[in-house]
Image (cartoon, rainbow, N blue to C red; front, side):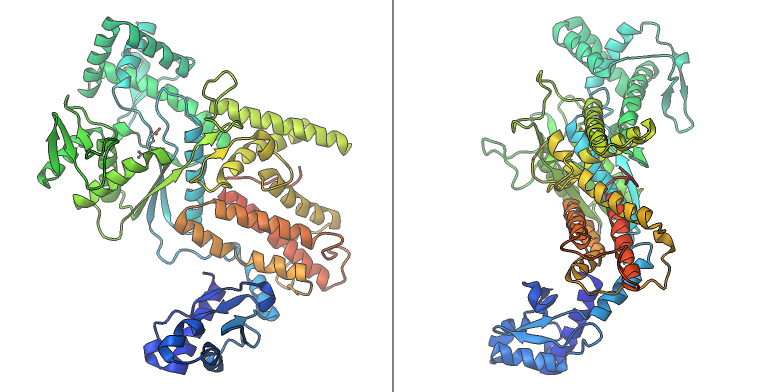
Length: 602
Ligand code: ARG
């Protein structure tokens, strides 16, 4: 609900009390956007719902409310329509004043949160020594966007990268590393002040990590002796043996450098790595505390928690295992430990986990166990933000033509290469000469933002089909379309020799034409959209909003359907330039929320 709607709601509540007495103080006026813009901007439907209780005709009730309703500052005289709807139409002067206000506001009317709080966004979270796949790409893009929005709203956001840097797979990796680098020595490392072992980056080059993983796995599967050494390496690693730890650190660092390349390409900032290993020492305590709270059950040697409603395929109760029969801990134990840490040490009030929908069950169980164990104080919210699969154009799981998983690096490079090819065709058609820097920059921004936008513009809960052609299309709900709208507005300022930032406080909006009204009303909704996304964590709503905005702008600026801007007479010219500027700033801000940088020219 935006500020205007909020004000109208309060006024309606007051009118209800004035008309029917105090017992109507808590009645919802049922104020909603007008079903048909012809009738106005909003409608209140409360009269229909009170008919029975008051024993009166809805139209009579509506008149009684309208008689006491004082909205003259905001609306034209309210009208009663149909069976008893109260129609409200915003006054032009009111809209103009609102636009002047957001024009002067660097936050474009997005209010700061009433109760700023510590919020954690757990996203990206790839696994060490494995390739980051498209699922991690989705998590990274969605998580980053959510974090940006929450931060802008004034929350204290902690971006956490829960990398998979622990577990039995390290046994084979360490063993393989020792075979490849028999001389690996302790002098290649130093201990950082934070107690982490950092690899001297120049001393070891693992090369292609995915290949490395594959080779290790092959030996593991085929060589019993290798398997035995791997098993021992796991024990060494877990018991803190310094050599095993060093080998582990080498692997982590090599992965980290690979991940960083992707994060740089995607402009992911302030993402703090706190991998699974971070919680290693607190795992026994998790199990002990669950034991104390009486939730733990031994099942075939494993320590488990049983929850109502969780069944396997055979319909038998499905437990959450927190300690395996060999004494080892797992993904779930680590998440329970992480959850406690985030509540106790980070003092998070909301914890958001961005992962594929396949983990919904896992988080459901983790959250329920944590609640049952009374680890979640009142007012702390745990949210799983699931997303669907990325599919190829054949509707099957996204793969290369050879059937391999697609590497993120390759995927992003391909998008940039295609953006470049499109641009070169366009430059030729338009007979434009541009510098190599310009072409590089535009290709980079368009390619990367096309990938991001294609992901974010889908309702994240559904699967989506990855198509370079669609995401790079200059028409349609795509990043290039939006970027183009922005660049077009900057073109107006260049053509007219106008510096938008110098329009000044005296530049006032005057609304006359219907395309101006449509654009203006849409511009006023950014704050509301952002609050909604803050709640439901669906960035696609913001994409839809921005797409609508670009379309409305294009109609407003259309030679036939819209109005002249640079050729208009004053004071309309300035007013329309303010609308242009507001559109550009809203696009820029909105795209920034999506992690997308704009281009002044493209
Ligand atoms: N590493 C996991 C994966 O690749 C994602 C971790 C998500 N975060 C968490 N706290 N479990 O699927």
